[in-house]
Amino acid sequence: MIIELKSDVNDAQANKLAKELLAIYMNRGDQKLIVTSSKMKGVESHYEGMIEAIHVFDSDIQLASRDFSKSTIPVKVGEVTVGGNSSNTLLIAGPCSVESEEQIEDTARFMKSIGITALRGGCFKPRTSPYSFQGLGEEGLKLMASMREKYNLSIVTEIRDATHADMVIDYTDVIQIGAKTMYDHGVLRKAGKSQKPVLLKRGFGTTLQEFVQAAEFILSGGNPNVMLCERGIRTFETKTRFTLDLCGVAYLKEYTNLPVILDPSHAMGHAYGVPDVTRACTAMGIDGLIIEVHPDPSVARSDAAQQLDFSTFGALYNSLKPIAEAVGRKIV
Ligand code: PEP
Ligand code: MN
Image (tube, rainbow, N blue to C red; front, top):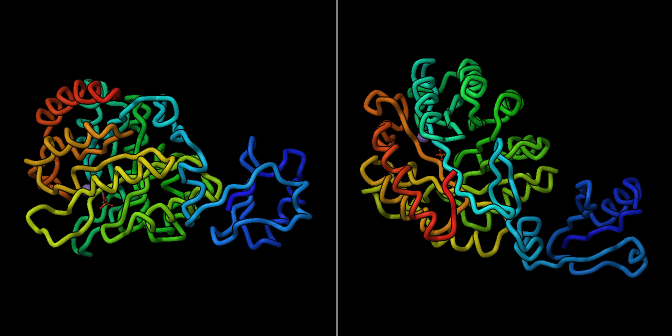
């Protein structure tokens, strides 16, 4: 249940009420909210003088629910707004990992030249094997930050665990929380304390309910700027890396108020399929896409098989524009 408090209720009164209800109090500036468990369906009558409105839900998808906010919440990534009144489909692109100055600069220069505004690149990589490349760490973050300065690109990079969360949050424009990290409550709580946009990826064994509840940790922590990212779930199929759950995307669009971003690269796992899947995703009318692109995918130090080279990505980018337009959207 979400209780909207009257504007004259002060923080001390609100905190006291939240404590009595075993709930979370959030002062969002224009809104003072108390969020309880969804099992609670009302309050005792002596609290009524403090209350503007009450919203009741059938599950703990509450702040993220379409029933709470009819319109998709706006999230600003640099100059670009996703969600809100915009009809933007934001294209985020770049390598899986930052590997060297030359590699990230070649990519940033290319992205800038074709009009891309958001550059991805992981520096703390959540690898399946301890013997694989783990990322450049802070050195990589510095390279990403210098690409922001030099090419005026928004940078998107991931937190692997809570030990370096503050450092990544300081450097990045968009906080990426990966499929393996989305259960790390230390990371979710750190992201909730920031106001920077968060790209929260769905774990590959995560139900939609669990996924959106992870977003609720960030939202209820005080950060309203959360974007959900579907990147494929594990099914019986092994010919593709994961199975992109487009039905789940339809559910997220219908029942949540958060922008939805799709990651065809990790779902497909093989570059040959990424352009077709990206076009299919675009036709769903989504808020954004995140695609892995590398100057020379054959030598990439992580996710080599799925990264697109510049010419394939450039052609894909051009082919997306009319598809987005056909569903009332604009690729930005
Ligand atoms: C990535 O974006 O490179 C990544 C590790 O993705 P995921 O967390 O979805 O596996
Ligand atoms: Mn990757």
